[in-house]
Length: 612
Image 1 (cartoon, rainbow, N blue to C red):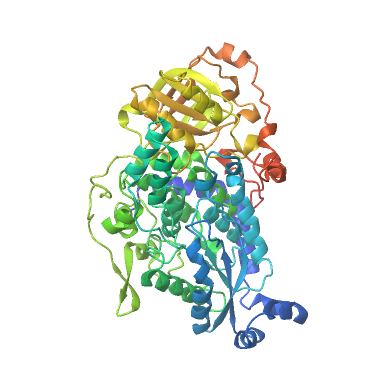
Image 2 (tube, helix red, strand yellow):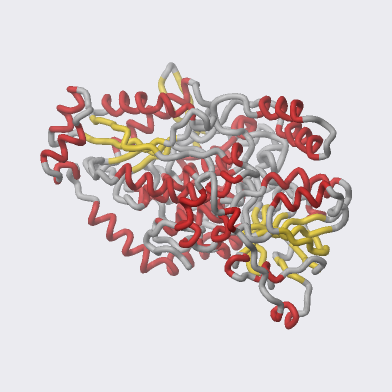
């Protein structure tokens, strides 16, 4: 199928814009990609330290000239349900790599925090910064420079982007990302939202709310709504970094374990010692980044990836912009409705056709680059239109379903849920922001109402409880950007604003902060840049100003005389309460160094350095 002209044009524009930095990055990969095990460049004492804890057989292999050494970077902990299954993965991987003639070692662990636990509390202010912390941890894990390839074990929000950013600093190594899969379906997402709203209205108590929540989040695996964690898994397939079809297979199943073993075996086949060297820095190229963006739009994925994808691209020497993403949204149809964009969860999406059908549809429509390098080898992205199955105990890949098994969940390109993608770029006299429209009803995508200005989400909650928001209102929540307080998610406001919307009011949120990937029906202009701490226009909005958010036209404006608005003093806020306690004081250097949201809110360096 011929590539769509817009996809081709945007990709070429990214390639030209990135040419100098990307070329330097690729040259670095080539210099690092020597076709001998790098550990043999080390001194004997260094090697002895690296293999001291190995068993006799593995130690003997690594002392030789030809054995493969595979590093495992894991984000295991057993509090985070999505990462608890990783407890058993290292042994599965070690056994599979040993069968392939190599040795696998756990190179290091990285932190993995749960936004579901910290949502609405101080710990959430470390969430975005944990991504760059994970990137640094990945680099430290691989810094021993003894490995021929690596496997990255991660699923959730900041963990996968952080692992990938760190991995791209070792772009000469082949790396495969290994997921754990979603937990089985519990209480419906619709019921969960209903109960949350009842609690916000004071109609039920904490006991009933907790019972509902534990029925929804009930076992090992990823939360089943389509938030950032599951958007990560979609993107890893779209970018060719998973084994095909690995994203949404439940943990603790024979197929899940078989896919993990296959990833371990495959990474041994794509090192520089063989004939299919597939360094991760070459897999993640301009085409792969565009494929990730298209997948995000086609599924109504998490708004967090308008930050994370930019940061990932920059780590590979690629300059992706929000304008690129907006252009691709204009030609990418919305093909999936998974909560919060619909009532179904990711298990139902997987059963209805899932990733294989999605890739197949987008490839046939010319909306994806098929001619890409992937960890799966020959066949390009078409390999990801296949489904893994166990036949007589053996893992095989075959054709996925040729059509949707539930058109309420996933559709074809010729009959989409919407002609355009789920994310929209907003521009106007307040700056630039993004909005997720895939879960917002069409009649609610334009809001013009008086502003009510807040500096903390607790102030919004208090105003709601006092009845001060029972009207058409645009809640302006500022000083929530990366420099102010780490850019926490503000998902706890969703039930509150949802109640106001259900009462018939026109309601919107405008903020320089983030919303959760699980946020849905409220029109929310988020990631507004410049942020208030940088003196952005949001810092000059006053209570009562008319604000217009138009997700149809792609505009965001305060309707105040331009001269008057420019002449206003910029608001200043005392942010000291954001900077102490729960470890926040340790992240002062991050707040001082972080770049703007539209440049990926990056703290760590890379080919582009840190954007100002």
